[in-house]
Image (cartoon, rainbow, N blue to C red):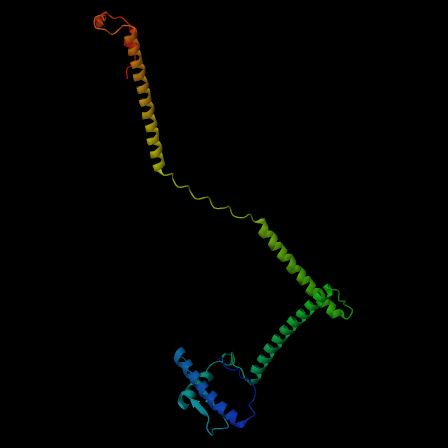
Length: 241
């Protein structure tokens, strides 16, 4: 749960003001002590109030006197370098508030003229505007046109940039060698089949030839001449398997 923001204004109720004083005084002295411990610097606090007969002094009257004496020994320019009183503090707060007010007025005026510009686009007249309003409206229109031109320029520059080239396709995996082995085996089988077919055809042709010789009377033992007497070149050139 967030803490409720406290309004910085005088508390008119006496009891509430006294309770707030005691609470804030305790917190202030605690912060002064923490500042002295964390940063190793000399600090002191003197608090006057209508609720106490004697002022509240921290850390001790002797330590406060030493710190004040050391401060008075500094040059006057250094003493007032970062010193503020209630009047100067209020002036700073007022100047800061005025600056924030002017900024908010400029933002509200710009939003108002933007609405007038949009209404004029749908046909609403500008007869009720004075010179100041027209000048502010012209400033808002020029600003809007400038923003539109910058947006168009940015889009054109993005379109002019060529897109990056697509990544190269992944390398194809090497073909498996199993299919090559099957193809080699099939080719070897076909070769063996062709050789076997040729051999069987040669044997059949030889058997047919021998049978035809038997029918013609050749091949008997008494009619055959010795091998050395035969001079037929056919048998010597025949390609036996």
